[in-house]
Each structure stands twice: as structure tokens, then as C-alpha cells.
Length: 122
Image (cartoon, rainbow, N blue to C red):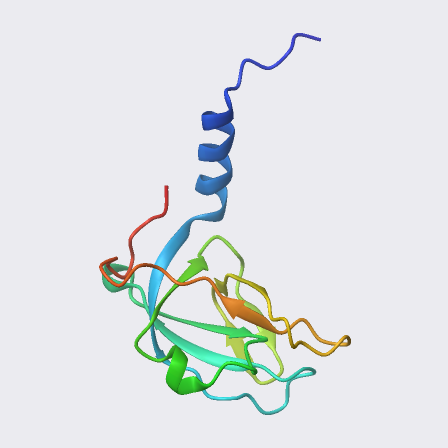
């Protein structure tokens, strides 16, 4: 079998295209009720792509710290029902250093303040 002629850049481009990572403005992020783990229910503005919702384990971050910030979301995921909520996109994050061992609490990945909601990462 012939070796692939993919360059690292083309591999990265293919991965990013598959994930469709975009900038989203957090409009609200209240704590959820009825989910298995403490979570937040995000209402997100993706500019011309419209509003989306997401549920994620960001409960250790105050809502005031999230609202008005721009986060990175994965738009290529299928919508999922999480407790009584519908999660349409995935807010990307890294492990929160104070997350309990039985949870996956996270810190969101923020976009620069000059980024526009809906911008595609590349």
C-alpha cells in the first residue's frame, strides 16, 4: 500500500473541517437541573449561523464570568438530549484543576475579544 502524501497542514485542515470549530458569544449559562453531573445550559450566538444551545460541565465557572465572552464551539456534533435539555453544539474546554474526580468539570477555551461570532477557526 502506498504511503499517504498528506502534509501536516492538510491533516489539520481535514480535522478542523470535520469538527467545524466556530466562535460563539455566550448569552446566558445558568446551572442545569436534572442532569447527571453539575452543568451549565448555554445559549450561544453564532452570528449569521443563528442561536445554538449547549450543555456542558462548566459548573465551577460563575455565569457572570461566561456571559459576554466568546468561546470556541464544535458545530459538527449531532444534537444530544442531556436530561431535559437539548445540546446542539459542544463548547470546547480544558480540565478544570478543581474538578471532583467523579466529574469532568472544565474551563472553556475563549476566543479573542475581536473575534466575530460565527467565525470559523483555521
